[in-house]
Image (cartoon, rainbow, N blue to C red; front, top):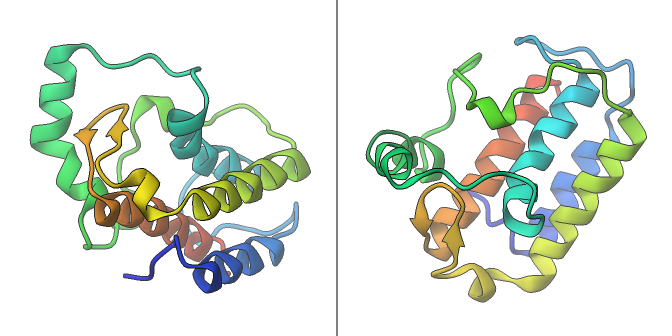
Length: 150
C-alpha cells in the first residue's frame, strides 16, 4: 500500500483530486462527486474537528471486533460496500469547498507525519499504528478516486 505520509504520494493523490470536476460521473455507487469529497472529508473531521460524537463503549467494542480490520487492513474495499452512518452524505455539497477541505486535510496529515499518528487514538477503533492510519487514509481515498475514474 502506498504511504500517504510521503510527499510524493500526497502529491499524487492531490493530482488525482484535481482531475475531478463538478460533472465527473461515478463508475459505481450512489454519491455524486461533491458528496464523495464530503464523504472523504469525514475521516479527517474525525481526527481534526470535534464534530462527530464518540461511540459508546459497547459500540466501540463492536467496531473494533468487526469493522476495524476491514478499515485499517491492506485489503481493498469492495465496490458499493456498506457505509457507516456518519459517512452517509445525502444532501448536496459544494464541489470547490469540499475539494479544498480535502486537499487541506491531506496536506496537514502529511505535514504532521506518520510519527504524529503512531499510537494516536482514533474516534472509533482506539489506538492505531502509523501503518493502520496510513491504510485507513490511503485506501479510502484510493477507493473513491477510483470510483470516479481518476
